Structure formats: structure tokens, C-alpha cells
Amino acid sequence: MGRLEYLPLDLSSLESVKKAAETFTKKETRLDILLNNAGVMSLPYTKTKDGLEMQIGTNVVGHYLLTMLLMPTLAATARLPEYADTGKTVRVVQVSSMGHTVLTKSRIDGGWKDLEAVNRQFAPEVLATWFRYGKSKTGNILLANRVKALAEQNQLAISSASLHPGVIRSNLLAGLSLSYGSLITSIIDFVAYPFQLSVEQGALTQLYACASPAFDEEKQSGAFLVPYGKIGRAAWYARDEGGEAGRDLDAFVEAFAKQKVGVDIRQVLKEEGRMSNL
Image (cartoon, rainbow, N blue to C red; front, side, top):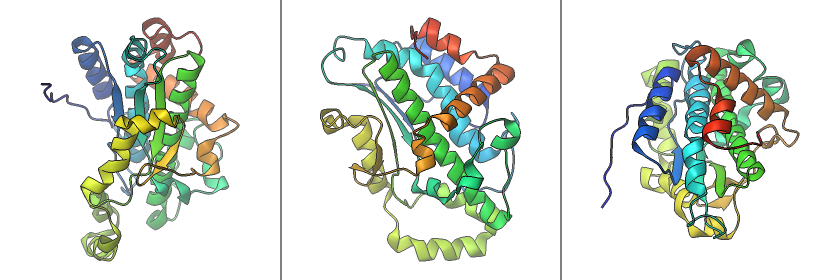
């Protein structure tokens, strides 16, 4: 019988992410499922201790660094006999949201080029918090694209997916009170309640992506899933068919992580993950 272990991790701090990954890799030699489902929503414009807009720093950059630091363990697991040439895959899943669709071309173009672009506040603030959230959820899909490409280019039995879990009755709405006040938040919560999923229902699509044999059988790596385990369609800028946004995000996070916490992501992938094609 396995057991749960508490691993402290603050996704808004790259130092915390680095330490958590180091702690995990010292204790464990395999990782079959990585589900990146933490996040914040609709916060006022604030920054992390590393200087990133809070929703971007927590939802995107923290998850990106964590995933890349764990990729060597994921890759080692994918090379085990139980995965090699069996049709089964290690799973890496990013919890995004249909909230990513609130953006427009003018709001997303060049959005990952540099720190100024990444930290763009948008306006007016009454709507801007949702644009920042949507951008962060777009980043989750771009990360899923990156993991899929790494797996394919290095012939690893790793599947990657992103998903919209549904609108769930959870404490994710806590950020609303900071942006709009308790009265408006209570009204929104009251109106939305009949249309929200329970936490248990909200977990179903995540569980499908992480553990369902059908996911492998139907070769759904790269999919954007919606409740309950169905194939959806992400916005064009998240699908990123030309790859420009993904390359910009990769380059930004790689440079930022190296500057802030001394992590060379490409070196980690090459030397520890034995991946030659990046």
C-alpha cells in the first residue's frame, strides 16, 4: 500500500519550485503521472517575489519550471519495460480553462517575448484580471504542446494533454473578492452556483487524462479535453500551429529561470533527461 507524502511547494516562488523538485528527485526514481492543477484566478495586479505578474508566475512559469525539472524522472520512467513499446504512456497533464478564450489577437501577440510583455497589465482593470487569467491558461496549453514535442522528438512513451475541468464549486473564486469586493463576489457566486460542477465532477476529466486506458488506446496525446473526457478545441492562439508563441514562452522561461534560480533547463533535459532533441 502506498502512502501520501506532503511536499511543500509554492508555485509563485521559483526557489520553492526548485527545492521541491530537488526533494522529489532525491527520494524517487520514477514518476508515472504529473498533474499540474494548482492555480489562482482573477487577482488584482500584483507580482511574485521573482517579479512576475501573480497569475502568470503561479499558473504558468511555476508549472513550467516544475515540469522541466521533473522531465528527467518522467523520461526515465517512460523508458521502463512496462512502457516501452507497450502502447502505455506516462502522463503529463496541464489543467487549463475555457477562460483562455477571452483573449484577442492584439492582447496575445508577442505576449511572451520579454518580461514587459509577460507582465502586461491590460485595461480596464475590471476586465484586465480576466485577460491575465486567460493568458495564464493559454500558457498551460503551450506547456502541454512543449511536453508533447519533447516526447515525440526523443521517442519517449510520454503523453501530454491540457484540459478544461469545468466550472467548479471551489475556492478558486476567492480571488474575486480581492478584485471586486465581497458583495459582488457573493452575487456572482449565487448566480453561478446552479451551473457549477461539484469538486468530484470537476475531477473526472483530470482523472481521465491521468489514468484512463482509453486515453492511450485512442492516442489522445496533444488533446485539449473538456468534461467529461471529451475532445475539445483550444483557441487558435493556444493551438499555436506555427509554434511562435511556444518558442517565445520557452525562451522566456529558460532565460528567467537561469537568471533567478540558476537553473539551465536545456542542460537538465540534455544531461539528466538524456534528451538530444530539444
